[in-house]
Length: 383
Image (cartoon, rainbow, N blue to C red; front, side):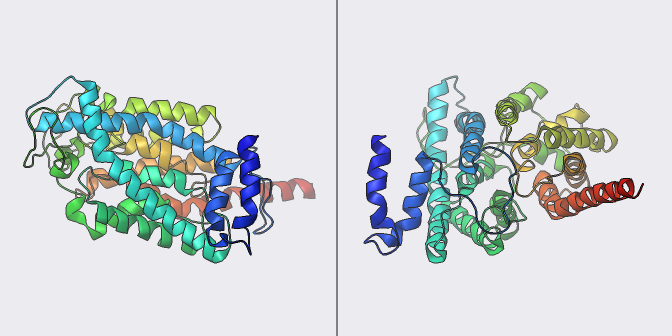
């Protein structure tokens, strides 16, 4: 109650006509961070989708992302030390190294993204959309650990402006902003998104032997794409002790996040399950040629497949919303991801393009099912 009273006393200064009105949107964002807004939507024909406040659902997603984020930090340090021949079982040492590498990326993502959103919200005299609280943590988790901060800043700005704000802000965009960031990086700066060395950090102090000059380590998808045998064991790909994007390597950590999202009613289990089913079927029917000691089901444990299925495909804004449509939407994502991976070596990580492609078709899928239901009801009414 004390904090609420303080915020209420401060509010007039940030309201229109107040001394600090230029920061009104920023104050509103801070206030609704602590307390549920006491206003409801009055425009755009808003409809109730569920019973939970959107800001609260956003923070459930952030909580679900924490296991993958924390493990990713540990894995950064682990892969770094393995690459330089100084592997250590010191969990704290590995984690601290990864934390130091990851923290600047998180800061840049939030400063750039939220800075743009606050500026646009203030210009439009609207509240700050809460969606970037998730996008801001997703972006650093799906980029290579060696991605330069200035490139990350440019890509984040591009995604916020052209994948979100031009469509009207949170809830109006048709593409997942975090995936647009990765797509922008992939096509604008391909050297920073491909090759093996981008997945092992080389810019920080080694916990054991001091500084390093530069090393590389092969990712399973990179090995598959080049026709090599995968050196990582199935257990390593499931646990996540392999090179890869910061948050995408550990299937175990991602599974914990999936349980949290499904339990909280935030993510659709139908999309998650159907994505894995589609991917499994296509991986069985379309195996990698020449892949030695690599089973079809391992396709679901490498790269960003699991992460995309749980945290990207289930985005409530860009995914299908009809219950039957969710099955089709997820299934096609899984199918397309494997097709892109196997048939086009230039895109070894097919999950990004598969989800962006199905973002385009999600409204059509929903339209078909809605129209089908309308036609069935019309026929029953005639009888």
